[in-house]
Amino acid sequence: MLTPARREFLISALRYGVAGVFNTLVGFSIIVALDVGLHLPAHLANAIGYAVGVCVSFVLSKLFVFKARRTGRSTPVRYVVAVAVAFALNQGVLTLAKLVLPAGPLWSVAAQGAAAVSYTGALFLLSHFWVFAHAAPPSAHPRESGDPS
Image (cartoon, rainbow, N blue to C red; front, side, top):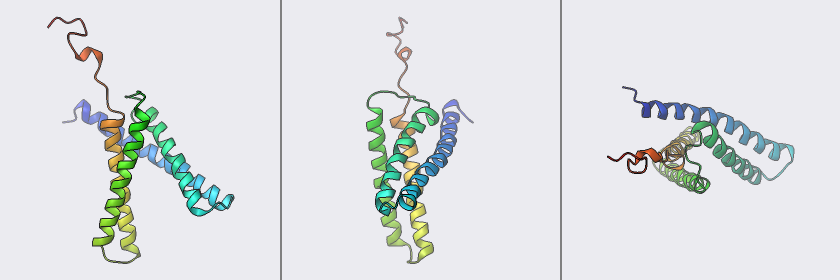
């Protein structure tokens, strides 16, 4: 059965996918513009593109994907921690995949794909359940809402 919580989770996942496509287009466009257009070193262009991408991703997650369910001062810090955890998982999956998969271009793509999926999934779950998690509504505590029970 599709409970309200499951429905919200699925809608968030769909929005996350849409935001991810937009974010990828923005980040990749910046990388190409800096690398090919302005002839910056490839690694610098890549790093700048990813940095902008993390910022765009945060804004899209806050305003579109999770609709600012948590707006405290700790939210940006939580997001940076979530990105770091997801990236660490990404690197771990990539390392493991490179160890267990055969050598070759197709297997390298498979390893990178597995790492990317682990990053995307981990960042979505961390964002949904921790970074932008619902704060308990004030009325959740009967004594605070004036209910004597």
